[in-house]
Length: 154
View 1 (cartoon, rainbow, N blue to C red):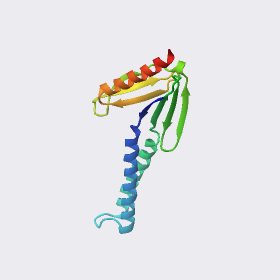
View 2: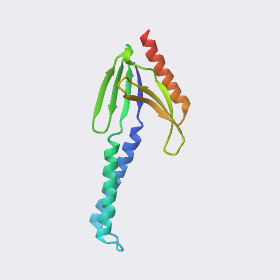
View 3: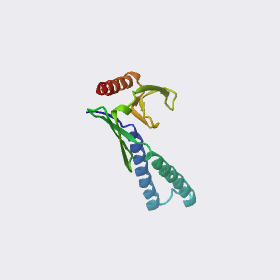
View 4: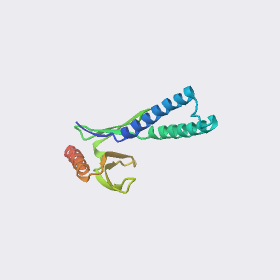
């Protein structure tokens, strides 16, 4: 059995955990010590409310981003597991239903090239096996996945 993992969601989860930890700490300091001398409670409450809204919204969004684990079985079937901070979803894809992986060219938020090794299942679900800014490792993942799945079909 060979396993493919995409853990890119961890970065978002860790960022939001740090954001919320800092937010709790700073809220406690304001409650304990009061607002700075040059600011009113109303102003500080509005600022804190803004940061809490951003933190809760960002945390809710981060909980929708999932990590992926794909186990390629000896039979060629896939055991797929998507995990988010609040739940896990599992699915089995039989060997005859496994399409080949392709490398998808894209751009990140800065406009830089970004590559994804993607398997699109018959129902439209996508498995992003690997992703990053360097094309060769993503191509290697696609080649390795395709060799494993083709090898099992023979």
